[in-house]
Length: 433
Image (tube, rainbow, N blue to C red; front, side):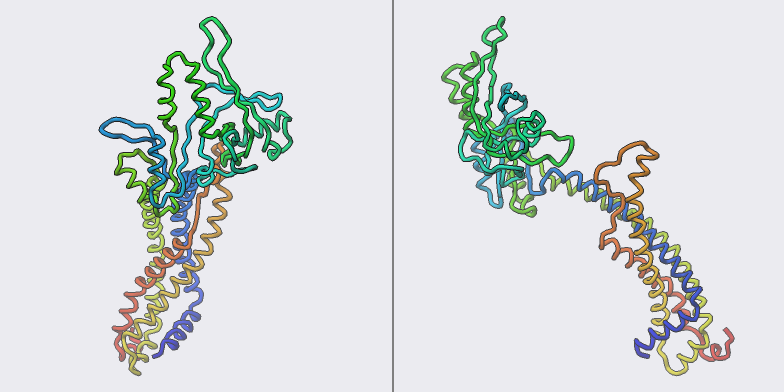
């Protein structure tokens, strides 16, 4: 009996019992749909958490905090940065150091307060920094400013658009110590700078960037001034302090996420304290993997319950087709062929149910994602997290669930199919069974 004939035989028999087959397919569809929707919660929450963790970070970023050698903590210096830059697969090394003094910035008639840090501009552009306007500074007196620094000037009506700030002069006032204990006059000096670029707006609404980004040469000039007006530092110590300036923050960017682990290992071998989002992602993914496996296991129970209907349908099919089975055996059909016919039928029922259940589960998933935020606002009186995805159905989940449904359906038809191969020909033809 050819495969084509076997499939035609199965199709004809399924048409004869449409009502029963319909109810069995419906049960299989409900089981598969429940499995997919339940497991999709794990995939959706994982996607939300991963998105939340990685939104403001690059997977290629490695934060370096310092070096611990023989129990002693060492800050990061220029020598460390040079070694980082010499490592293979390193795309960029950014370093920042804050101004250790109170500052004010004057633009036209407006005086703004904030913070200032020194950066290496080319390294920042190769890292994560993006500019809303302007470009790379051409000399040491040019600076970048944060998005909200420029936005504040717009609100103060000093400029109409962010682009207008590029090229504008800024006076940076750096305050030292008070002239004496009884005086309210403070030592201060003014640095004349010019805006070369404005950074893009931070991705989070609550993040405010009023920072002024200086060149390292400007920071050295500020440090020299602060040391010169400080009575606690001797003159001979001034040059040594400036020369050995340590960085507050150093980030390494790999040229590919696959190289992060390799670079981190080299840093760990030299006792550097590091953090990479890739390492955190491994733990997060491990937790969600366990969660997804558990949800799929629980959802499979619904598919197994639905398989009871398939088992009953196939058992009845064997009973009703006893005479047909006897005729097939009488004309020489192999038991393996008879068994295969019933397995094809049970597998077809499971596969059709799985396909229908998949379509339904996608609809349920979209409805849940739309309704869940509304339910949180209505019943819990709270705003849902931004970008929350409660249910997500990737292609891999669909294939896994359809595969489980198909395998369970085939196994459900196994016992009736074996029973069909053991039917006695003579009794079948006499309809004694």
